[in-house]
Length: 512
Ligand SMILES: [Zn+2]
Image (tube, rainbow, N blue to C red; front, side):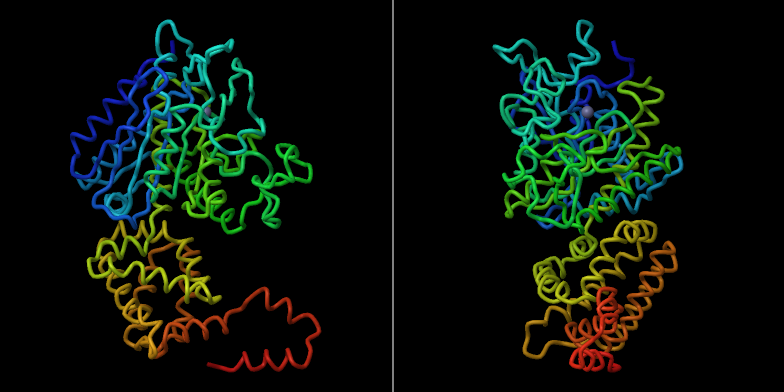
């Protein structure tokens, strides 16, 4: 029998019921469409105050592998802590890491947090029962006609399922992939969550053990240069899953950067609790895999461009499957910090700020088209978007600590939008000097409370502000882009330039 203290499958279920009845104004219970193989009802819970299709959503799943006992307890505990902090307006402290009540409030009011803490209840019942096997990993499918029971649910998703990489077709194997992708009701429930709640864009599957934070891909080494060398291209069939050969899986470099950046924040949040430094690496660092949840969720938008891009992580907690419960509590604390950090990175600052203001909520589509049609088409604009992405988590924490920042940022966004929303007009509006000065002051105030890197990046943006005084957004972006040191351009200037090119460059240098 496993150590005592861990929740039973029924106990996890009771936690969800308790949360839904105790916090009815901002939680919602969902019965998933399919029961487990043995007929158990599987539920998910949403924690969210307010609604709106624009909100980003995060999904945490756990209990996929039966013997990895800690993680359903962790997810239930995370949900309880979030709900308690929100209703009692108290900070959450995990060892050396604290999240302010203001930060938790922003998360619950600014995004949808979904939990599916026990994907595989049958397996957990078997692990924890007297006649069971404490080291059982798979679900409890009887596999009629086959010698052994159970399917490895984390080899059953539709990502290179047919390849057989890191999976087995033998029912007695611990990595038996099943009779087809999504042959199991338990994995179909996870797919349902993604299909049904289309605002899910962040996903974490929590496993044990090894102290790892893993990101895609799992089938082969990553590469960022050849988009045609990818899991969908049949030319490469048979060559995947052998790190070191010519095949490497394509991942856009912006995505890879984002994974490393978000993963670093998760790792650091975990480490801040009691000094356990998890290893952040590509999934294949563990061993080649296919049919896993993390690769599946991230692959969906490559397969179907109509689907939303989902950032997928797998976290491997602890140093054993079933530590004594006293140690499990430490693991729960550090993992919870990592989960909250992941939520923070998932929150969209613009959407949150606009969503908290009735006057701006209807403007979101307009803000998005401005971003796509103007901002992202200029070098300076792309840089601002990148910086905003890089520093969202830090700004969220600053806002969480100082609630007065929320209305100030809202006001700023509103006045900027008054100008940018006219970008299609014959005579678009210009930023007046007063506005630019106010923006400068706000940025300066933010930077004074932030990290060294944040300060440095804010300085970079503040230097550009002068280009926007009395100018339209498009003109300001054009001037700011022209005056940026573009490392790519610098290199080309080293090459012998033709007269024409030199003349062009000279005109670009004109002071503005
Ligand atoms: Zn696992």
